[in-house]
Image (tube, rainbow, N blue to C red):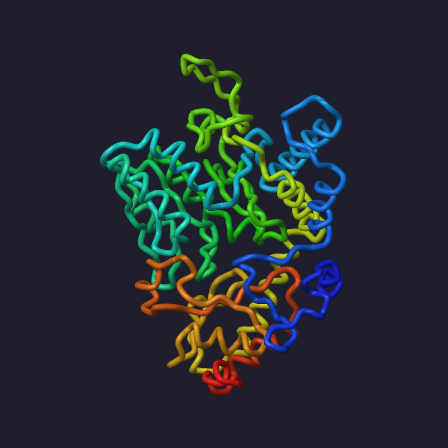
Length: 410
């Protein structure tokens, strides 16, 4: 039985004392980041208070124990997304993961006239690195058209892909509209044309079951902080044979087997060759604790909880014609909307005055604004600890919010 109230007790930020604008905090910006349970905080603190040592830098017990725990977390991540441990590269987060693929594979192997397929719904982290690849190689970015709702369909992938396509890089769940695309189908089409499938999993891995092997995708990036883990740590999952062919993004200690005065350098095998310098060890330990926490609750239970909250919210908003909902049919938790005649940031400021935290603006998906025909939107995103009572507070604030100017002058 999913008990959201018991789950909430494990989060210091949800102890009932946290206020915003003098109101109890209602946090509905979980697509941006999530709160951290005490077990994650404890895992990080324990490293600093009881386990501090570098990794792969010496031959003593403290360091050996750190090495073992780091490899244990690598294995947990691999099991969580159904990959192999040697296919898990620790990164600073999803942005770094995609940049690693762009620089390590794209710049090395793409050439003039090669195509990279994206969509208008992509986050900047999955567009700007590919623009840089094109600038440096002469490759070109093409955009797969979205359907009228903003979905990525297999038909549109088939219509856009050509034999010149070398990379198809898309979000499994987009961060504004929240639509879930058929990644397994997209990977199959990409491979039929000799292209690789790169997946931005920032908004999917924390919410729905991910199967790297079964979907036959080539690269997957995601961040710990969007799944109850710490900031500054994430993972790139890559097929080993592709990681082996790639160049590292950073050079330094810990990623080479040897080098000499002649400039001869021998790199370690993946994933070590991509992990130069001292890693974010406390972050890695927190990442592992976050995965344990999610596994205990169950990723399917989390997804179902979010869907139920979304359905509950939509039912309460039914019939209010002044509320524009841009993703009514999405099968994910987030709800993206505007109030007619109200600028998105003004609406978010009003909600803030009532203790409600939401995201407003362009959500780092600036190209999508042209598709939506609006300069900005408001996004409400629940997570595993969100309650129906919090949705009630949110809905009441939207429907009975009062004068927007009150938020600025009261």
